[in-house]
Amino acid sequence: MAEARYLVRALEGRLAGVARVPYLPVLRAVKGPDEALEYKDVRAAAQKLRRTMEGK
Image 1 (tube, one colour):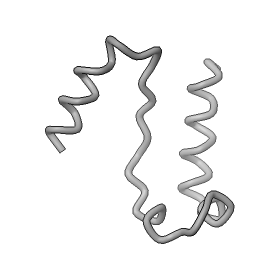
Image 2: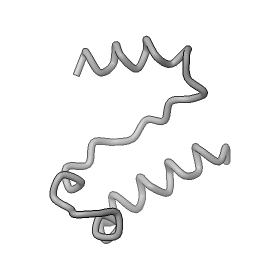
Image 3: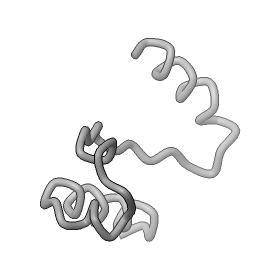
Image 4: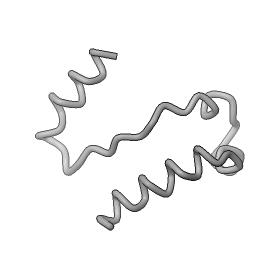
């Protein structure tokens, strides 16, 4: 986990932006985005990510 944090900090200055999303274990078990969006926590994270990307 520390390696991931270091990588994000190292790259943040070189990227247009960094969006942080929670770890969602269910994403390991689904076969695609349609199936993933059947889960409430995935839908909530997707909506939050969309708002962040759109600058709202």
